[in-house]
Length: 212
Image (cartoon, rainbow, N blue to C red; front, side):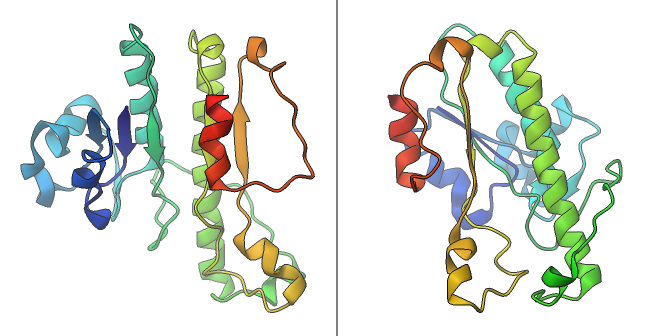
């Protein structure tokens, strides 16, 4: 069970994952100050991706996903449960120089509920856009590779942009805590079970869904 994460300082996650049955904790770390973490850290990733760019959290999401693709293609001998944690869409909301955000139009109804000023809000939306695009590219790369027929992809978030938008109305409280859940299945597995789009679920339902 490899754990792939763009940073290993957050709540001591590098050491914590090794206590959570992760046989290999692949921490993608690029901050020179933490190079002492050894070959699992800065030097290892710089050697594999010498052009990788970083944020205050570690590597940008695109390098995490590229590492995951390479890892899966290089380790085909046995089943792998690969757990990844994206970090780019966090303060201070940085973007890699090679990413040019698509135009973002903030509707007036949303502008009235912004916690940040509009300029800061656009940066937050842009990093959200980047994070989603990188996840989408990863999924597309899996689908068009030899991994497509033998991989299951589950993706979700721990919270929405809760520091960006006010939710003052009671009727909006559900929106404040809702997060998406995406599930990709190979065609030969899609006939198993039924999907009810009107039924609520939570994070505790993700693993049972994958298992069964």
